[in-house]
View 1: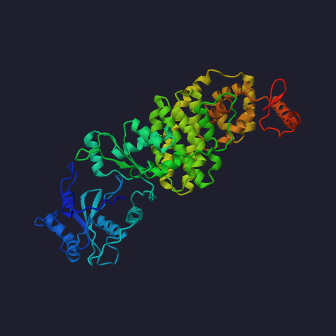
View 2: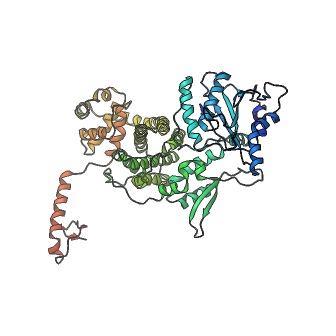
View 3: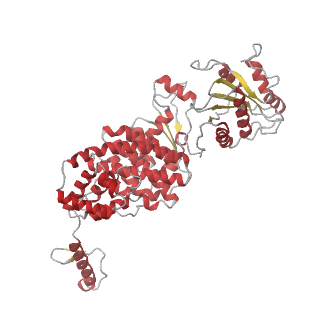
Length: 570
């Protein structure tokens, strides 16, 4: 059940005309009052042919007019309006039940507190099966104004209890991190202009798509403006950026002027201070990376960055920052992925946006590497090869699972659900991306003797999951990957253990597929020659010790390296 308190109004008669009218699309049927502050003597134009809307408006406005005459100062915007809607799958509620629900909502809001006979005048009008409209005038019978501060949160709590008491669909408790719902006026305007989204939703998608491309708030606004968004910056006398608003081209008011929306009104995490905190961090993040004997592509670097996600989730401020940056990486990947994967990835990015809304302050420096990876992908002109893309998408799936688990552990119900929804799109895209990789591997099978050896490696390295891996349809492809890695100097047993440590396999639907992407990523470079590496370290240490004698007793440089002629060079 959703109760959406509307902005305060000033015209009681005008709102009644809408509630008792046919509606904008003839959707209103049998409008009538189901509850109110004092039903006795209440004129109801829906049930009494002699009652008029003007009479009902005057009845509700009496305390307002009395206060205006006594104080000589008109009360501004005294009309409180709150539609209350049941879920589509809920049972049909009776008029009596809607009356009880309306009573509980006005009590929770502070319009008519329980046991207070001097509360505000209100009515509940029903003109459809699934919802009512509560209208109140916000002057009490004693002339005082009601205390409506924080009424939205109190009404939301009341709705959650009403759902339980009446056996209705139970929604999650609000956490004040959601963006504003589109108003009816915005939805009707979008429909009238043939737009699929309201202006604020459209602008939110564009801002989130621009974030991976920018390293500062100024860059972000410039990128938006270059993309056709109408940008209105607010600057101080020094020229410093103090705020911003954006407008959708063609979204004009009745006077033909551009309509602008401040960032904070589009989504709570898109205010200028929050964007600056996310974008303008420069502290690098120390983390273990994969071996890079060959230059890593942005796609491989992003996978490396995701490998560190689980290492710092215990610190709440770091975890929140990493989850926010994860959303940027999903968005950047969606923009650069092949066309046949973009529908699933864009849906995942849009769903994950809600998981980015913080309830905990983010230490944004902790997400520097993830955010850099997102920017590198956004700016790359090189398409990923099939293996790199499949690996990254598999890593994004696992990172999103971790994000959902973290939000759930912190009781962030809306964010956890958003991550779960995003997971569906990511899994679908990951499945699509992996299929050509599996098809290619299936054509290259190791010898029977090699397969027997690899079976032994699997049972020794991952005994708890060996049966599922070896009996699964992806085992032949995994065997080919392990054989390729072994040919490159890697030890299959060690690769299997490392891959299993990176991502637990109990919840994996097909663990062999998880191992394929992980092992292809970690074995993409030849294995190092351990004996040669040890010899190099010994030589470097010996020359460092000789540094003072060779350089006139100067301190040894930490940058000493070895040339083929074994002479040190700074």
